[in-house]
Image 1 (cartoon, rainbow, N blue to C red):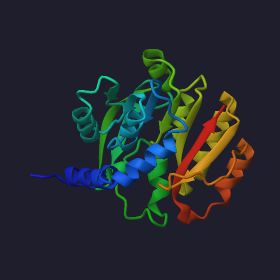
Image 2 (cartoon, rainbow, N blue to C red):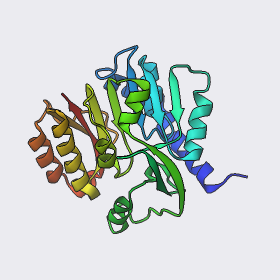
Image 3 (cartoon, rainbow, N blue to C red):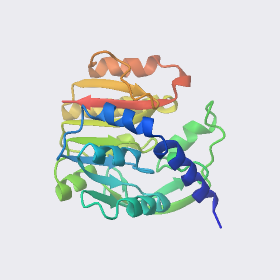
Length: 245
């Protein structure tokens, strides 16, 4: 018998993993960031579309996903791939454990952040989302991952409003990284940019939604990308900000 969460995961796989044209677009977009034979961290792997992309581009991948169903799906898919390690854990500012709020009808927005849930409650396009269950999950830091696995060439972070907490647990800059932002939590995006500036990042670009294209023709400085985030209409909803040293 299928549960609500099983059906939701099947829907996510159909959206994120069932389109060969989308896979090709992912590869084209990330090819400029990923060098064959290098290490990449996929933080918030969900159903593994980025993990699979990074592997197609020849990277070794450490993928973290705290949701048990998603992690089990990923372990099954990559069980024979020695260049991919799936870790069932979240990323935060400190090692320990945290409460994961599960959206069982839409697992892609399950979150550790109660502020994210509060921001979504009255926001256009988000009101239908419900976080109906909770589980405790282990939490690691990005520094923990680097100490265990080495320094990656790229880190992708997509953890539903908890991105700044993740960056608090990173004390050294890597060549490039990205973090997801939403227009319902612009303050989190600005805090992430400020943290990255502290770490020495100077160049920023963004990609809205799943366009897989940069919104800026050339990189921006930190102050410019912060200002750009503020100018976005609420309907822009979400995207990713990329940072380079």
